[in-house]
Image (cartoon, rainbow, N blue to C red):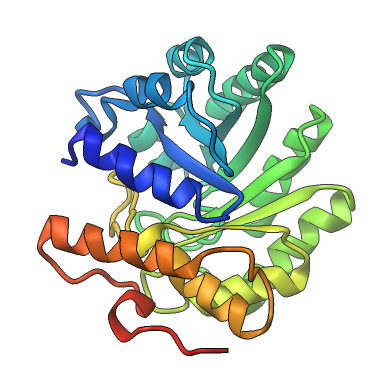
Amino acid sequence: MVPSLVKLDWIRRVADSGVDIVQVGSFVRGDKVPQMADTDDLFRTLAGESHRALLSALVLNDKGLERALAVGVPLICLGVSASETHSRKNTGMGTDDAQRRIIALALEARQAGRRVQVSVQSAFGCGFEGAIAEDRVRAMVEAYLAAGLTAISLADTAGHAFPAQMQRLVAQVLTLEPAAEVTAHIHDTYGLGMANVYAAMEAGATAIETSFGGLGGCPFTKVAAGNVATEDLVHGLQRAGQRTDINLATLVSVAQDVATHFGRELPGRVQRAGGIKA
């Protein structure tokens, strides 16, 4: 559990570092995920402030959307798992029912003037079910596109992805809709996180979802492990002369504060080893 004031400090610093989007929290049940119980209050506080980054939140059901609209979330992210088991553990619904509901919510959010992103969770494998058929992922993407939803995230929730698979699935989305905005959401459960990042970028993904310090991990998957660390990705990009507009030192300082707060070593490399000067 992280006090709201501490969260606000981390969020503000990351949002002003030069990254494009910061996801503040999830509109989920506080009794199920108490770490997210203050998401409404965080947005109420941040709504009156100006930040360089676009603020977003995750929504999984009608009540969540109602709460997100009430506090003015500008970018609403909605997701459905390609794994039947993970979907039921995460939302209490099977994949098909969950996607129909999520599409309806996404269209409602867009009608309300909000930016929307939809995702296929567990797109690359599931800790409960193992391999996920790529045809299943493709069918879910096709359903999103048929509804006019073209900002699509492919999420490696369980961290099972490998680079060739990442390239293949990202390319398939762009084959279906060349104008799609493809995001890759990548966990580093088995050490292939950064390799998958570059595979996604090479295949045409225009955004990568990371987490400062390498925090994260879905509490409803079998092996919860963090995302690729934001500061590690930014460091790698800057060594190639990309995204030099982002303040890496700020991201590293936040990750170091997170490590101090929790009293444990975080998985991110750069905040421990220090960056290499370009």
